[in-house]
Length: 349
Image (tube, rainbow, N blue to C red; front, side, top):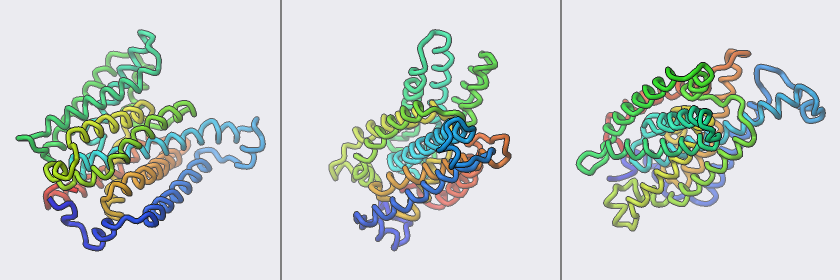
């Protein structure tokens, strides 16, 4: 299968020649966009603050709002958005399906169920908060493997079967979460609602640091496999002939993406479509070379998430919209467009 089929010739040529200068210039431009989005998100909100007073007077409300609420929230938005977009890029390459994304395939829902069960059980049995990301990772990995295995037809991965299985798993995880919700008290029901809607509300610096560590570890694994992901776009047999251990690559990517999704879900709940919108947009602009696309998606996803969270905070201020609702409002129409566009030809990258 030709990985550049349906791609305009200028884009194929630019994607085929990834120079160090081109890589650095694109990443620098995206980094500037991220800085602008992060600065706007830190400065604006439902309450007006003075940046000078926030830095000069530690006892002022401005200092408390900026350093206690907005800055850790912006940091968490950067981390979660970067992880979700990078995961989407890797999954799309792994299954050769541009519609693949952690939320759509039911992986985020599995991670959320694991996190919710860990939250409820740790409170009753004294397991501690450390069990939440661990259980989210385990459930996300289980969901990833199950979706992939069930989408195999006669030894081949069927793109539309993959989407159908993902929809079924989303419905199953949602029903399981509702079942848990019906059996717990009001306090846990509020936490479960948080996981279902997706939110970056009230993070701490410690949480941000922990999630960032897991995310960077997973991303390092993905970047190490970037060349193999490029070869995998040729098909399993062609990639194997070029020296790629396809089974080992899939196992590695499954584990790395499950760690990243589990870590993100454990602090933000289910935030869908980030891993669909960002990688596909960047792929259209910069090409499908994962040596560029993975770090570009990391930065672009961070900028998108921070911007979406800013809209969620100021759209109906002083009330707040869950950021998962904002990304879903953007991602729903985008997914329909992608589905109609890709339905005119075989789904492939």
